[in-house]
Structure formats: structure tokens, C-alpha cells
Image 1 (tube, helix red, strand yellow):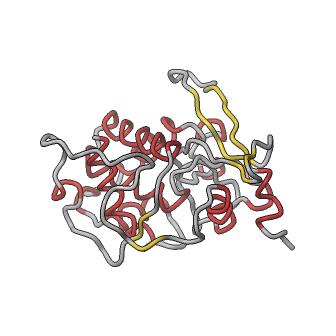
Image 2 (cartoon, rainbow, N blue to C red):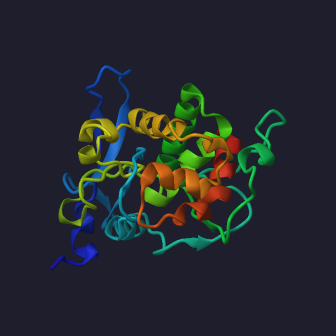
Image 3 (spheres, helix red, strand yellow):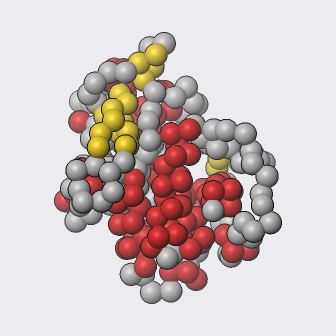
Length: 241
């Protein structure tokens, strides 16, 4: 029987690592169950990484993130304004329009969470990958919304007995499903580009509702969960594009 999440929460740590692949070297941080780094009894969560899952959201990981960052369990009701972990930046005239970002509007009630600097950095990595892979603003919204659902934009390393199979990273991608090695899928650039590469293989993905496009890539047990993050994802992409 698994222990309660608060028993292992203090072991969640912020660890930095260098890329070891041939991609440009940069620093990243991964939430793992080793190397305790705590302040006031709670570990602070670092940068996130993109990665897809083949099952539902990792309840243990979500609860751990909530507790580690001092956030309430579950999602908050949608609120106006952009929550990015820093002051709201006015939208520039050349930023993408809402129609471009959300061509189908939103599906159902929306959720919204405040973002810290680590989460915002991960969102930036996803947006940059969207530009480089050519999926554009709409693809970026799908990517950010997917990561908000899968990991709350945190880069999750392997969480031991609480891990969802071998899922890791922002999109909870699985090495056993062919997404890459653990080192690769906990790299924001690699994971984001892997997600967008899979998205581009879906015929007519640009015309699909967000939750349908995300689910086709993720193959999640909760196919409609992605829709709730579309509005916040659009806000983030509009600010970062």
C-alpha cells in the first residue's frame, strides 16, 4: 500500500542538470525524489519539461506539486487576468489575436492556476519550440494547455513508487512508449519538439478542438481534461509570442 503523499513530499527536490545530447547545452531543473532542497519544510519546484502520458493525470504528483508550492489542491476557478508568476504585461499590437489562438472558442468551464517563474520558463520553452517546429500560435496553445494538464508546467522526474508508470517531464512522456530516453524527455526543448512532431502527424490538427488534438497525441484516460486549460494557455502564448 502506498504511503500518503505528505510522507515523501520533503524528498521532492530541485536539481540542476546539463543536457548530454547533441542539442545546444542549457540548464534545466527536474522535480525528483532525491536530493532534498527545502525551505520552511517545503521543497520548491523547478523548471518544467514537456512530455505526454498514456494514462490519466498523476494524482500523487499533482498533490505533491500543490503542497510543495503552497497551492491549494485541485484547480482554481477561472479568473480574469493572466497569472504567470510575474506582473501582467500589456498585450502588444503585434501579438496573436484571440481568434488565432482559440479559433473554436473554449469548451466548458475553464481552470486557472497562478504560475511561478519556473513554470513560466517552461512555458517559454514550449512556445519557442512551437515557433521552431512551425506549428505556430495555435500549436503553442495546444502544447501549453497539454502541459498544464499533465504536469502543471513542472518538469517531473521519476517519482519512484508514486510515478505513473515511467512517465516523466512536462507532458509525462514515457520512454517505453518511444518518446525518448529519460534524459531526453526531461529536457524542455526535446520534449516540446517531440510533442509538436507528433501533433504535426495528425491530419488536419489545426482544425480540431484543442482537447481532440491533445488527446490524439497523449492517448490519455481523461481525454476531455485538456479543454479546461485553453483560455489560460491562450493568455500565456499571447504574452510570450
